[in-house]
Length: 133
Image (cartoon, rainbow, N blue to C red):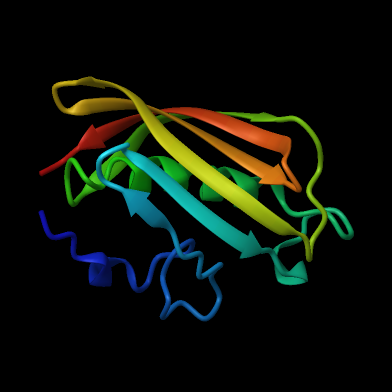
């Protein structure tokens, strides 16, 4: 299956042509149904001083969930996303974001994602994702 990632060029999280976005680059393992990204989050994405905005963290976790399922369909959308914040993330830190499909029921995936700094869990998500095609 060929995935057309060029459709995502304007996305706030992964769009390489979105100058205001995060420009996160996710890699996917089609066999393991996982996704992975390393990213340093700049200070333009802060909430409280020197702390990454929680909405940005949620967006990265959401994107990890979508990319984990991209081997199963080209277009997916999030139906539910539950985020648990474990500890604040400072701007300028390199983060690792991972997603993994843990269950599939027809056109609905259950996906888990995690965001870590230096191997320490900072936030995690549980999502339901719809496969559109």
